[in-house]
Amino acid sequence: MNTNNVPILENVNLDFLNKKAIHSFTPFTLLDYPDKSACILWFAGCNMKCDYCYNPEIVFGKGMFYFSEIISFLKSRRNLLDAVVFSGGECLIHKDIIPFIKLVKSLGFLIKVDTNGSQPKVLEKLIKEQLIDYVALDFKGTKEKFFAITKSDFYSQFISCFELLQNSSIPFEIRTTYHSSLLNPDDIASMQNVLVELGYDKTYFIQNFRNYQNTIAPLPDSQSISEKDIHQNMTKIIFR
Image (cartoon, rainbow, N blue to C red; front, side):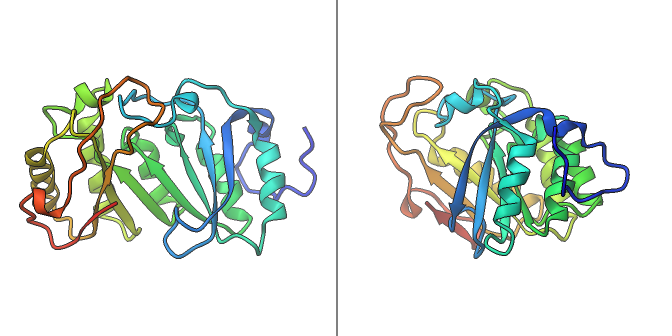
């Protein structure tokens, strides 16, 4: 492993640089970090197996790039990109994620994390150490349907992550992928109620499932939801 020109960080063990956790990366995007240019790191593996997931090759795949390779790429993009988006899969399940984020942050990039909300302890540490600048938190479904959608039991962890963000100064958004076989308009209204009761007053994004995608489980076509389909009790809801 060549660590030449890697910024020296106090109390950070750089042995992780010779490991692979990133399945692939998108070198440029103007869509994934609000008002910023960014690249996206797609971390392999996920602790949820959502039927509608568009990225089964990432969820079930392995790391293809050494952390050191990504650092070399990012060095070449300093002053060209504003931010780095950590996505997946689920980036926060990787044990080296905190030292890696510290290293990327030391290069001068803003950090956005896309998370399924299953790792509140990791998120809390990132918040306390001021290592992240924006978070997109997935709200997978109602408490009653959460396991059926995700094949996991992380609803309470999602709530904990939400409360951590709500009590921080970090900009964040809540987003839900809508598939009509898994959720219905009443579910969305119920999920809105949960957010309102917890004091959420930011934008709630509803992402309609895109039919004809390669997904983890075979699903019938989804009927898109729109503003007219639900009784909105939030002032800021955007359908994507």
